[in-house]
Amino acid sequence: MNVDLGDLNAFLTVARAGGFREGARLSGGSASALSDAIRRLETRLGVRLFNRTTRSVALTAAGNGLLARLEPALGEVANALDVVNGYRDRPAGTLRLNIPVSAARLALPEIIPAFLAKYPEILLEIITEESFVDLMAEGCDAGIRYDERLEQDMIAIPIGPRKQRFAAAASPDYLARNGTPQHPQDLLDHSCIRGRFASGAMFPWEFEKADQTLEVAVTGPFIMRPGGGTDLAVEVAKGGIGIIYLFEDWLTPFFKEGSLLPILEEWWPSFPGPKLYYPGRRLVPSPLRAFIDFIRAWPLHT
Image 1 (tube, rainbow, N blue to C red):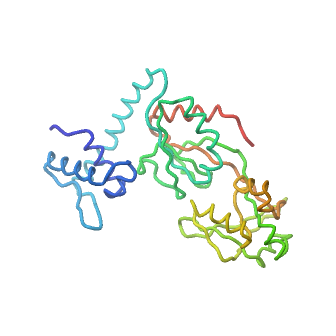
Image 2: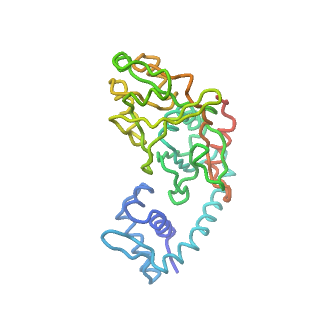
Image 3: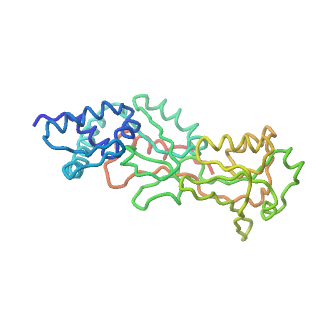
């Protein structure tokens, strides 16, 4: 049976993504091209692989059977092709990383240019995503997350700063008008700029000092979602609307320029920095192996 490998990859993309539009977004192609590939594949196989409606795309029984056998088979094909990379002078291929916006801003700006300069034949694709995702379903090789977001079957290595802190800050104008909090509980009387996780839960404001830890249920007129909303939240804080609670490294440039002032600094909680994680039960592609080795050799930052 003469079946095109590209059509099989298109099937895998649509099946993992749960639809043509999402599959096109993840693969960087077009929904119409994926649809044409699936139509060719179904014609050659003589069976319907997806049930399509105007609102959904779902695998048929035949499609589920093909997916179960095809994923490991194409994985072995990819691994076989990657063996050839071992005979090259330098690793080559595509490396896809799934990372939160905070890591893109705080952990990678120095690392990525140096890595790409060392490995010019590697194509690096970054997907920013705040919620923890299935790397395989998203077509990613590895991700970056914090300890509490790592699955148990993943291998993880530190990347970027080994220790970080959350910081509270406000503009000089806000503090002049409302006073400076001296204790975390004082925040209950202040306007605060809050954050909400992708899950819908509010981001907690936690503080620690010596053996004391506490969480304050703050209120305020502005709520940000992860991603681009963080930059806007900083601008809102700089505009004197309220107190912000964010990564210290994110706020440091504004401390230096004086547009924001640190508050409650002795109460700022510290936590382990981010980690690069990847599945431990598959052969590591050469671009990812090169990145892992590069990260292991990168100077430690406490």
